[in-house]
Every structure is written in C-alpha cells, then in structure tokens.
Image 1 (cartoon, rainbow over the protein chains, first blue to last red):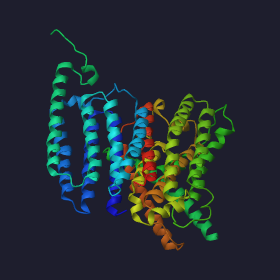
Image 2 (cartoon, chains in turn brown, orange):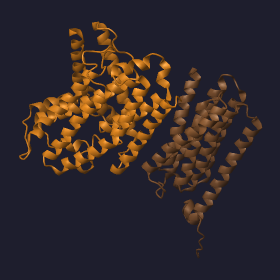
Image 3 (cartoon, chains in turn purple, cyan):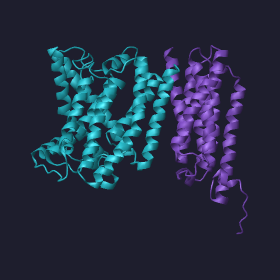
Image 4 (cartoon, rainbow over the protein chains, first blue to last red):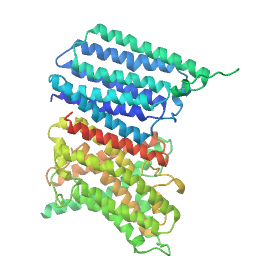
Length: 221
Length: 316
C-alpha cells in the first residue's frame, strides 16, 4: 500500500470511530462537534484519494465538504437553534450506551460484509472507503434510531450522507462537479429548514423530542 | 549473561529510583495548571522517607493477608520490569520468561491481594473500594485482552521485545489504523488502571467517592510506604509498556555501552515526562465520571479496541 493509502486507512479508521461516537455522546453540542470532526475526516479522505493520481474533482469535493459541512451547517445550527438545547443532556434515549455501542459494532461488521460484494465487482476501487462508508452508513442509521432530540437526528442524517460520500468518492472519483455543487447547496438548506422547525417547536412546546412532537396537543393559553 | 543480568538490575534501579519523581512532577504540573504553586517535585521521596520511619499499626482482626499484601504490591511492578524493555531494545535475561499477557496476570495477582487486604482490615470503606476496583477491573479486562489480541495479530507475537521491533521497521506501521486505535484504547486502560481522572480522582479525600485509594486507608508506616511506592512504580511500568513497546520504540540503548545506557535513561525519562504532560492535560480537562458512567467510558475503550482489531483483520 502506498503511504497515502495508509494515511487514508488511518482516516477511515477514525471516521468509523467518529460515527460510532455520534451514537453515544450525551450532550447535543458534543454530537455537533463530533459531526464536524467526521466531516473534516471525509474531506481529508477526499484529498488523500485525489492526490495520486491527481483528480481535481476530488479536491473540489473536499473543499465543498469543508465549506458546507464543517463551516456552514454547524454555524447555521448554532445560530438558529437556541443555546440551551446544546447544553442539555439527552436522557430519553431508546437504548443505553453499552447496548448502543454493541449494536454499532455489529452494524460495522455487517456493513463491511455487505460491501465485499461491491468490492469484488469492481476490484480497482479503494476497498477501504467502500466498506467503511457502508459500515458508517448503517451506524448513521443507528444514530437516527437511538436519538430522540431533533438536532442529533438531523446530524444522524448528515452523518449518513457523509458516509455515502465516503463510499462514493471511491466508486466514482470523476463524479460530475455539478452534482457535488447541487448537494453542497441542498444539504445546508435541509439543515436550515430543520433548524428553523426545531427552533419554532422548542418555542411552542419547550421540547425538541421527536417522539413527543408526534402527538397533537391543544393547550389553552 | 552476567551483562544482561546487570542490565536488568539497571532497569530495576531506573524504575525504583525515578518513579516517585514522575509522580511528583505529575502532582506539581497539575497544581501549576490550576494556578497554584504545589509541592516540590521531590515531595513523594520525602513522603516515602517519612512513612518508612513511622510506627506501623495493624487492625486487630487482620490476618497474614493484610501483612503480606504491601510487599506483594511493591514487588509486582519490579517483577514486570524484568520482562519489558525499559532501557534496552535487545532482549535481556528474563525477556522470554513471560509475555504481555503475563504482565497483565502479574498485576492481577497484586490487585487480587490488595482487594482482599482491604476487606481484611475490616474498614467498611475498604470493602467498598475493593468491590469498586473489582468492578472497574473486570470491565477493563476485555479491553486489555482485545488490545493484546490485536498486538499479537499485528506483530505475530506478544513478547514485548519482539512487538517493539515490529513498529520500528517500516515506520508506516506506526500509522496503521489498527495501531493508532490500539494506542487510544491502551491509553484509556492506563488511566483506568492507575486510578486517574476521569475514572478516579487521585487527589480526592472523600472516602465515599474513592475507588482506588480507599483500599490503602488502613495501611500505616512501612506498609503505607510500600503500597504508595508500588502505585508509583505501577504507573511507570505501564507508561513504559505504552511508550517503549507500543508508541515510540526509539531512544533505547542498542548495545551495552555505558554511554548508550545513560542516553537511554535520559530519553526514556523524557518520554515519560511527555506522557505525564498528556495526563495532566486529560486530568485538568475532564471531571470525574459517576460510578455507573465508568462502564460507558470502558465500553468506549472496548469499541475502540475492537475497531482496531477489525481494522487489522480486514487489512484496512
């Protein structure tokens, strides 16, 4: 393996650990920070894969990721969602921490074995990216399943998106740039809308627990 | 052969002589971070000297376990020192007498007797501390075992001297994901095993919150000194395993010349001081975890270690 490939493997290892950490960090603010780290790792993987042979598509993708996921989205979420939510601990989780971690480990293994078929079909892609991307995709789904607050749920969707990109940059390194730019605009917009909704829901109901929001309530003022 | 036995004795002297110093530096640095002056870095030596000179009192109902445990706690780090590369990167006399698994088991013996002695003393806090240490210990065990599995997969051996050679050869081995993740897990284990924050507060004086220290409450005089000394040495031995075997296997003597041994003493001491600085940062930035959150902390370490093994097995 080339030195860059080995460095990429290290980035992939940290990527999967960061994704697993998103399932268990208690504070919403910490979850956001881990998401930023995960996005930085995605950008690093894109730069490392795009260096040799040089691919400006991957470099552009890395820059777009840095800009939209590591800067714009965290800033939007910090700006729109009230500060108390970030300081609050999330208590009403559906699974406790050790069970979540075990499930995450099982999903990592499962993701790896699913990805093997893809890797076999196209042997010249970066196998590590595809398998860890798949594994992180499943762990991202677990974030959606175990977390009940709105902001971590949004971060779970975004983590899945990062994971899909991690696999994607290995499968299609010459991805048309227009698609990258479309996604770069699309995702902050999603974050903007969800953050705005969260803000309104928090004002009205005093909670951002997604499960609690599904029941209609009428309250006389 | 005489030479390698002599070098083993030098290693013992290194661990015996400098371990209180590192404890002193750690305590002093922590105080400085909190904008206090703190005790001199030589304070642990003075404490030990004072305690050795004091009269020893034994609890009335205690048995031979209580009386022999301090010697065991003192001796185990020294036995482990014989097995690991403290100053040299070539195997010494006892190098093949035991591997890293043996290191874990030897420490388990002293841990077992220490817990028994704490119960033997009849102090309720001792029994509480003993049961808590056992809880933390058995949660830390699987992580340690997985870390050692990963090491044996990576280096095809668990003899510390051979493992250490494996990271030196292509330097890129050092940055393999399995290795880096393994280091993270092992660092968390060191924090747990030596009773540092966020698992246990080493400077706490509140018996109800103690984990590690409440076991030593009943020891006095020379026993207290031995138990304390054993604790300092255990930290240095674990740090040496972390630094010389797993992280940075450089700066060790590769021949038995006096000059290279002296240089190795300096380098190893410097590396341990860097680790001490890292621990100061960790201890100053984390609060102590609640007892039942320690399971979460160690579950995190477990996941990291399993990911390390996964990365190694899948040739990531």
